[in-house]
Amino acid sequence: AYNFSAGPAALPESVLRRAQEEMLEWHGAGASIVELSHRGPEFMQVAVEAEADLRALVGVPDDYAVLFVGGGATTQQALLPLNFAAAGQAADYVVTGHWGRTAIRQAAPYADLRIAASGEIDGFHSIPAREAWRLSEDAAYVHITANETIHGVEFRDVPDVGDVPLFADFSSSIASEPIDVTRYGAIYAGAQKNLGPVGIGVAIIRRDLLERVGQPRADIFDYRLQLANGSMLNTPPSWNWYMLGLTVKWMLAEGGVAEFARRSAAKSTLLYESIDGSGGFYRNQVDSAARSRMNVPFFLHDDALDQPFLEEARAAGLISLKGHRVLGGMRASIYNAMPLEGVQALAQFMREFQQRHG
Ligand code: PLP
Image (cartoon, rainbow, N blue to C red; front, side, top):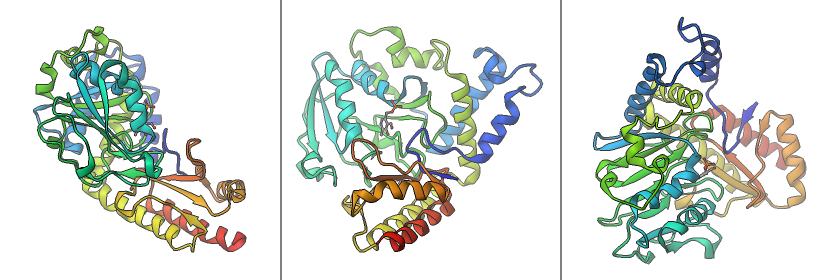
């Protein structure tokens, strides 16, 4: 089957097979990697390699720290103001979909939260023009969601926000194309779309920002302490970290982010052409300049067809196409592990379904 789940999402088959092989015993260690101490030499090697490989894949310069974090992307949304904004300091948010709204809810207790721009008035079908953003001069940072997983809206350019650090939620698009990391103060992502299984995430933070005092917080919420402790202030999610490492190695071996950018363009173009060329049977209303290459939400012209669509798709080996409850309709998530053949199969199924029900 081809799995179009938005996350936890499909992982490359070769990664799953290798994990299966290594699960019972880790290279003669007498136990599996998830049964060994996270401070022992075996897991240390896994952790060090995962960071080196992630740095190589994403292109993270030395003046940026890489942290492996628990608690998902949502926890980072709360930790960013705690670590980088003084109590009561302004923080600017640009909201282009559901996850931007979530980020605001997590940050609200810790910052003077300001919505610099929002795409909500037009139903999150576009990204508000940069000229219309109302940025605060005293903001601790500006926050954007690089790719909105539910609304299918993706920034295609890095917005210029001057000297204020730009923080970006890259949960659903990291490693899908080259990122100029130097344009950001912080990049964070839950792993469960492009990087591996759920249960771990990454935070890539410009080192000078770690000097900021932020607000009183427990050690466990402190990025600087986490960095000083190699992201192991407490027992880390070692299996997830190991799986992330395998997934990153797979992406490097496949040709890295330039190759995934090429594949993502081919896959998303095919899908949007299928939708736009259906004469209104299927529709996606996102502005073509902001359409996501990773998550393609679409609607059938008659929602009475939703259930038959899902059932017939499943019978054709195309699973997890039901849209998020916030939007309804359908959504095809086509992350790095989704081969072009999967999208071709979906496009063909959509044509045939239209012939049967059109
Ligand atoms: N941000 C984006 C863009 C997401 O897609 C998601 C989850 O789907 C989240 C944040 C929340 O991530 P988590 O469940 O890891 O906290």
